[in-house]
Length: 190
Image (cartoon, rainbow, N blue to C red; front, side, top):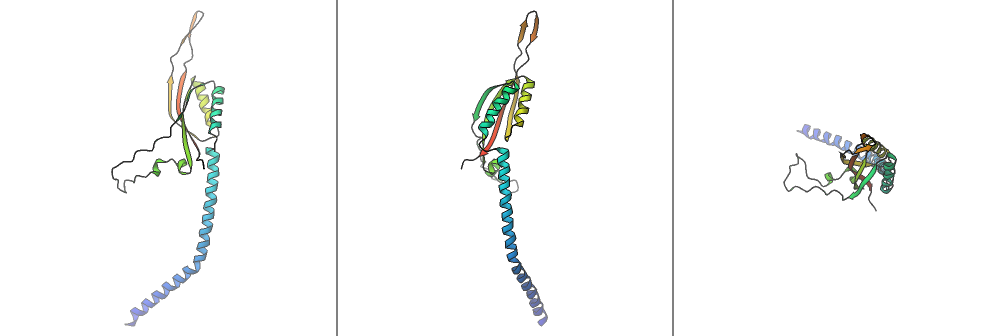
């Protein structure tokens, strides 16, 4: 009759000793938590510094001025520069989705940079020149020190014109139109 009761008492004593050991280790765990939070804070600060170096901070106007210089140095003409409205968020679906197929989240519409406190601004850029000059312009643009996302690239060849130089007929080199969308990321004003 006493054996089950003694076994329960022994189990409760083991459990009590385990809880007392965990209670003694609690201050050490709290210190480790504070240390981990400090480390996380330092890493987040380093990440913000790195992002500011890559994405830039209020350097978009400087980039556009440098883009004009690179166009002149490459021998291409900027035909169009047009600021674009920010992209509209995708329309929310009214249908229900199960958790296994994924939930509709407004956060998924944001880019990672927007999630980190940057806003996106875009411009439409159209440049005209020879193919080799356009290639040189794109390479020079890649070397500029600002995070720029290019999309919607379009190349169109203009018609060739016939030159009449004395008795020989020559064709002028064909000009190529390059159209693209450039998206910049800059810190949200505080």
